[in-house]
Length: 92
Image 1 (tube, rainbow, N blue to C red):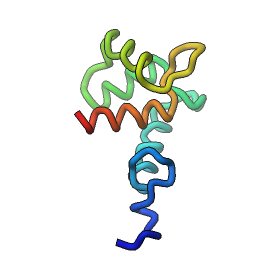
Image 2 (image 1 turned 135 degrees about the vertical axis):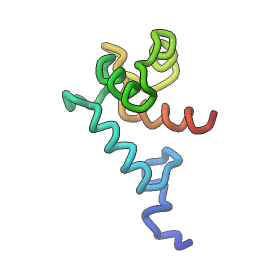
Image 3 (image 1 turned 180 degrees about the vertical axis):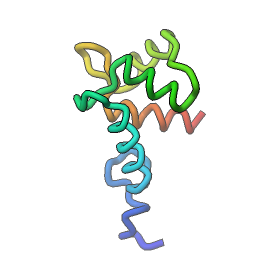
Image 4 (image 1 turned 90 degrees about the horizontal axis):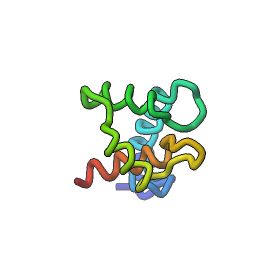
């Protein structure tokens, strides 16, 4: 592969190809209904229900707030935290 191929670059340092990172950022934006750059509990519930058929449990939300990038003021999951969430889920 060509080292200059954008699909293979890890331009954001998140371990994803540029194309896949763009897809994940698009998914995040789709569920960030208020456009504030973070997923609140309601937005996370919509995401989890769309992907898994049910919202995250309180224990799962607490785990996210402890281990992923979240906004300090309200615990909303930041875009970097969303990327971390996907990396953790796919590595498991």
